[in-house]
Amino acid sequence: MKIGFLGTGKISASMVDGLIRSKFDVSSVIVSPRNAQRAEQLSHNYNKVMIAENNQELLDASDCVFLCLPNQIAKEVLHSLRFHPEQLVVSVLAMAKVAEVEEWINHKVYRAVPLPFVAECKNLTPIYPNHPFLRDLFDALGGTLVLEAEEQFNLFMTAGSLMGVYCNFIETAHQWFMTQGLKKQQSADFLAMMFGNLTDEMRKIVAAKSSVSLDFALLEKEFSTKGGTNELLSNCFSHQGGRRALTIALETTLQKISAPKNT
Ligand SMILES: NC(=O)C1=CN([C@@H]2O[C@H](COP(=O)(O)OP(=O)(O)OC[C@H]3O[C@@H](n4cnc5c(N)ncnc54)[C@H](OP(=O)(O)O)[C@@H]3O)[C@@H](O)[C@H]2O)C=CC1
Image (cartoon, rainbow, N blue to C red; front, side):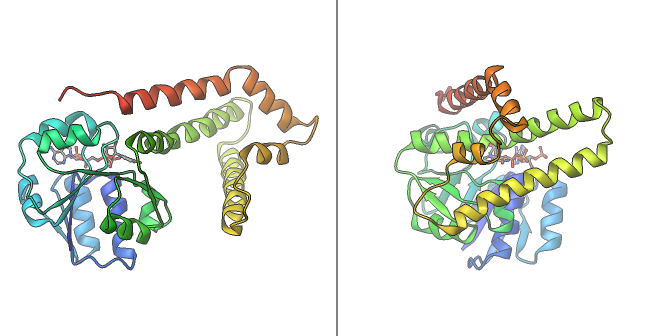
């Protein structure tokens, strides 16, 4: 199977890294010439990776193509391209629904939310609708979550949009500690170690595969001594609008993801 990536950015590079590292049987990978530096790097790193002359040549050579373009220009770029009837087309575009992309390209479309961690074959990737080839591919990259409805898929797209705000949260605390006099390196080391360890705790619970699913409220309690400073900080954050701000941000993002575009 020849797999093509239209738009050679962060997600394409992560998927290429993961595919080459995985046991998935891929005969060759074709990337589009933009971003030139990233495409060059991938073809330099891996024998199986070739750079197409242009977007149409990439489509002509691919059995399966992942649409990994910036959202703002996707419609315009895709409109001018010819897809082949037997080709499997997978959109990773966050902000366009299946029906919209199908109208742009006049071709059946599947969707996926691969996150950068597919590069190390350790991410669960939601797909919609189900497709056996995509299931096998993403299973090799860490696991597949098959969604029956696009509304469910859009909720996972929203969940996948939490990475930036998570870093924002830590950065806000980090900046505050520095204004209070902590050394940059010491603050960064401490925060990175603590948040990394919290993530490891969640991994342990998931790996134990107990019948009880991960309970985040319980974790919050476990890491908050009754009457202690963790409880104080968490309650203060919630009462000052922290939870509300996150809920509003999630709703705004889901609305943007789900809103119909001008087709
Ligand atoms: N990053 C993530 O975690 C996730 C991203 N997504 C979605 O995936 C898509 C890609 O995201 P991401 O990889 O992060 O974005 P990037 O900006 O890293 O990659 C987009 C790539 O498209 C290239 N490009 C721009 N114009 C064209 C064109 N006309 N023809 C071909 N390629 C072009 C850009 O090249 P150049 O640099 O030269 O402009 C760039 O390399 C987006 O729609 C995003 O919403 C979905 C799930 C998760």
